[in-house]
Image (cartoon, helix red, strand yellow):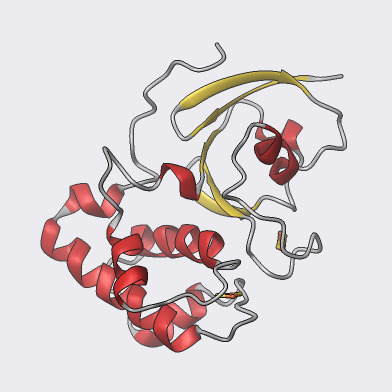
Length: 174
Ligand code: FES
Ligand code: FES
């Protein structure tokens, strides 16, 4: 079985994996169960994580393809006990119902706001078009992303970079 080395939320993991294992299943085996499997067919976006700062649906990536990469999941969003502005805005706007789509929405939104810190409502909707909410909570989700964008612009570049731009802290399995 191939050896892979992946840094997840700042912690490095060295493992042997089956060549066919999907990244989302690998993350969950590492205990990162905050990243759910929604459909397994690349449709829902619930499994979205950042791979080297870019959002990917982790059910469409083989674990071996992530070898050497830096993965950010929803579990690494909060820093030093403080929620990311997107998490705060989702809470304030009640931008979730069952919550199943929420990790993927948060990760996709963080990628969107890195690329476009001042999106229009239409741009937020386009940026999240790969993420489905079966509870149809889109209005509040879009409002929350716009709120977070405004807050992150007011807070400056440091807020805009979290979580994808955070420096890995090392440690873990290696
Ligand atoms: S579980 Fe990956 S897109 Fe649905
Ligand atoms: S909150 Fe239920 S799927 Fe989005």
